[in-house]
Image (cartoon, rainbow, N blue to C red; front, side, top):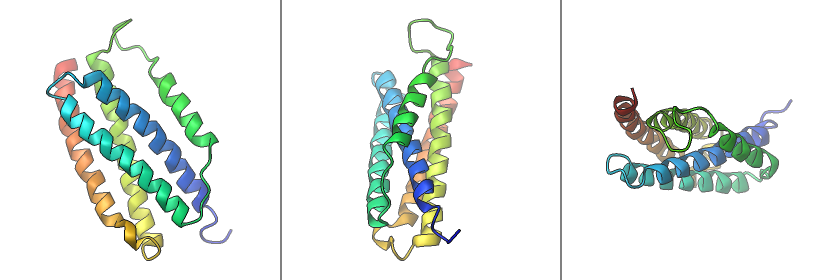
Length: 158
């Protein structure tokens, strides 16, 4: 298999993950918008995650990689099914929901950081205008902020 032949699959897998991440970030933002400890920080992180997904789409266009319609749709369904997990409350948002959702979002952001690093290593010259290093640094900053929120959520839930 020639080098680069797997790039479309890799990028579409990340696009699916980014789509699920946006859905999860929006849910976290909406469920916590009135909480001064979580709302403003989650709104900012959500906006960045949305922007990062758009950047990924632009990168795919630059590399002439078609965007799968199926994978992101399946990711959205999977994210919504994940909302059905027991959270200790039947009809309302739970502190446990927030804790677990922050953990899952951290996993997605860590994967995104690895994506930016992999692209920088393999396609850095072709994608120089995207400043992949800065995108990776922003993901690292997102992880730091999410960790702070996660520890606060753990204190409230556990």
